[in-house]
Length: 241
Ligand SMILES: O=C(CO)COP(=O)(O)O
Image 1 (cartoon, rainbow, N blue to C red):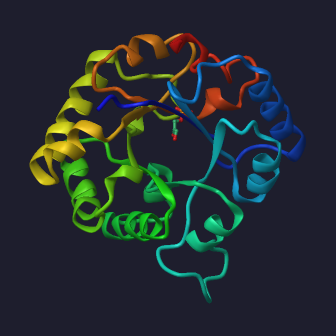
Image 2 (cartoon, rainbow, N blue to C red):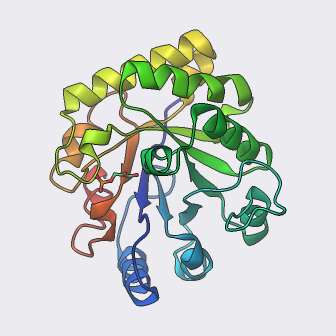
Image 3 (tube, rainbow, N blue to C red):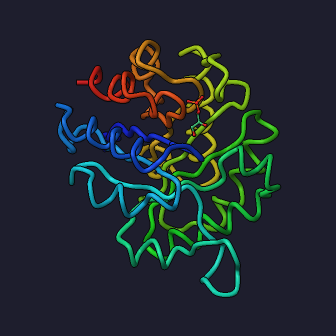
């Protein structure tokens, strides 16, 4: 089964309502390949989720940047997977390295979150670590807890490449993605290994995306900084036609 290319824009903790509207307008006016060819997902901060969802073209989708590990309740400051379902937000990013590093999210916690979100019908962009020593223990709780991989995209984001302008070479990205696919084959099963999208994040922009996309195991991107720049916001979608 062919893996549909996946392009995610992670806006992180950035933007005003006006800036967000400008990005959405740019996305809405763009001519891009059909939804059958490329899946495009943008991830604004929580407070802008409904605004973006209400304005965004219907062939693009919205992702939250995090959600709580279990059913909602007395967890001040959190939002739950049920709330995302209630608002019609189909995707969530879980386990981003910024949350792992700054908020001490552990592999187990991330694995539980991925499993809970998937169990509630929210699709997950699950971010995993950089070195083999980090990737295996990071992936194991996800592999142990997730039963339905149809709704999981794995994002490989080397920390040294995030926000630094130092992108992995296409060969480096391919090597890790290939290793991750082998890991899925050995630890989940061959079908999941063949069908799961493994996307790359870290200083992706219009200038480097085509070479990365040409790698057989690079199934898309999670783009940070460039997804916020009006001049760049389409550059990693359009060239893939
Ligand atoms: O962290 C990232 C996406 O989740 C990557 O960020 P940059 O594209 O800004 O390097």
